[in-house]
Each structure stands twice: as C-alpha cells, then as structure tokens.
Length: 433
Image (cartoon, rainbow, N blue to C red; front, top):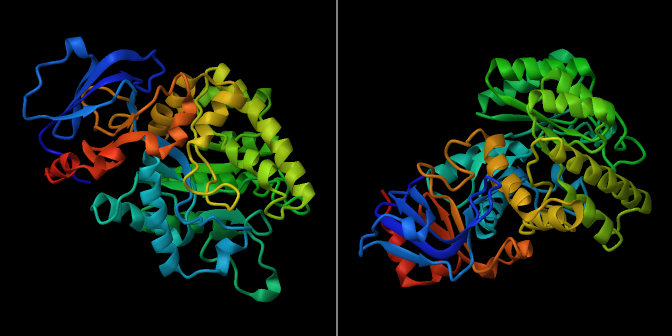
C-alpha cells in the first residue's frame, strides 16, 4: 500500500491517541512521508513548512484509524445463514467483498482482522488493497473456517450431497483437522477460524451451550497452525468450549460469552484477547421479529447478550484485553454499522469512552500483530488517522456518523471523509510514492 509523500499537519483538535491516556487538547499531529513524526500539544510542535498540507480538526477529535477485529468481508447483509452457502458464486462474492472493504474505510476503519471469509476471498482482497487496486482496510486474513461435522456451520443435509465447500471445511477427527489447516496454509491465510461451540442461531441442534469440536480436534488445529506460524481463533460461547480453546493454545477467543472463573484465569495467564461481538446480539434482539427470527432464537440471543456483557466487563476489569468488532453483514446488523459496537460498549456494557476507543484501536492492532505500525498515534507509526468533527469522549456516537468525518487517512493519504470533496485533498492524494 502506497504512502503519502510530503508533509501534513493536523491541528486545532483534541488528540485521543488510543493508549487509554487522557486526551491532549489543542494538539497537533505532524506527518512526514506517510508516518507520524510528532503528536502532542500544538505549542510544542516542530516548525511546519508553509508548503505543508494542513487539516483543521475544527475543535474536534484526532484519533487512530479504527480496527474492526472480527470482519466478515463476504457476508452481504444476509437474511439467514443458508444464504452464505450456495446463493451466489465466488465471482459475485468477490465483488461484494470489495464493496464492503470500501465501506469500512468510509466508516473510519483503516484496518481489520478477518473473522472468516467465503472461498478464501480475503486473501486476494488483501492483495488487491495492498496493491491499491481497491480501497479497503489493512487486512489480516482467515479464509474458510473449520467446523466439525454436524456443527454450527454444517447445515446442508446429507441427501443434498453438496457439502459446505465455499464456506467451511467440515472435519471428522484430528486428521481432518490437520488437513484443513494445511489447505489454508497454501492460500496465505494468517488466522485459522474454528467453531468449537454452537450459537443461539441454532437452538434445536447446536445452541450456545453445545460443544461442536472435541479438544483433540482443537489441539490438532493449533499444533498444525502454529507449526506453520498461523494463529488460531474460535467461535466460543459455551463455558467448556472457551476453556478447551484456551487449554489447546488458541491465540484469541471470539465472543467468550459464558466465561467462568477458571476460564478467566486461563485467559489472563496467557494474555489472550477476546472479541465479544456484542452488538450483533443486541441487533438480533431489537430487530429479530422484524426479520422473522423465531422467538426461541431471539430469546437465545438475549441470553448470550446478557452473558456476553457480564463476561466482557469482567475480562476488562481483570486486566484482560478486549477487541471490538463482529458479525456485521446480516440484514439486521448490516455492514456500515461497525461503530455501533463502540457506542454499545460505552452506553450499555460499562466501558469508558477512552477504554472503548483503546479496544477499537490499540488492542485491534495487537490482535492483527501490527501494533508496531498502527493502532495508536505515536511517532514512527504509519499515519492511519481519523479526524472527526466532534468530541468523541463527550459523545462517542459521533463515530457512527460518517458525515462528521473530516478525513480518514491511511499512510497519510486521505481515503475518505469531507476532505475528499476538495481540490486540496486531491492534490495531496497525488503525492503518492
């Protein structure tokens, strides 16, 4: 991905650097050749050349580009899980993923960790983004997911004889588990996504207390993935499934809904991040009836919502790491609503705005393994910056309003926001090295 050349100076705003530290009022951010050179009070900023590009934050907020830590690029605002399987060919799904990637940038998300992707599309989507063929967030890829036979993501009955080839690898035992990981290795995948437990979406067969993979299968996935320097994560709601994943050596936990004291101790001992993905549950409860979800499914989502809120707050208050993002791409929880996750954690879970923003920036970058490059506003890091016309600490919901974004920058290049409408910005955009 190209970076800007020349100098840009962002001023007249409050810096929220993503570390959880209090903001810096009347701050300045100096960017040279796509990297941050100075962050701090404007009064202490180095001299800025008259030829530098200047961005006036209008008394608003200057913060790191947001990180969506559970991004489904190939989910296309589906109405039911089965829509993911055989409804569209890979060619159309690929186009949809590019549209969702551009939308993520427009929403202020300059980086994302994939939470599973049909046909391994995210591997190629990442290359297209890195080669500036399409606009999108910096990606960590995961490709097709791994699910045991009869598990949550294995819904086609045997008589159809069509399997689940585009969406997941179906495994039976440890040899199948190893084989699936090795197939992902060849496609350049970075994260192996698995389904150790069920979900409220399948109350009759694989509900949120059901175990869908054996420990031996999970252990085989981890050992094979780690041997090839891949990381492993898993959809973990049931208490024992969470603990099995942590004992097997998982590198992150998706949801962590019903974590108990023993599970929390295991999580903290290895400093494993958790991505609760709670707004999906909230949206399922709020809009489930509108979209025809059965009442027992809605009730299950309420249970996972309540359990997830309690677990997420426990993890954070105990010193654990929480990443934000998750499961956008359903009709009732569509792409583009990503920042509702941040607002929800502040307004209904109990995180402070500074904590929620840290989870959505710094921790997200750590989950991607790119904390040395992005996630906080610090000297030497890439200039992935979000400039917002509004005080995100006083009202974090302004992050939901794209019309309030003055600039969304990747490597110092403005990719979205109000300034893309001005000649000033297009001049800056042509200065790519």
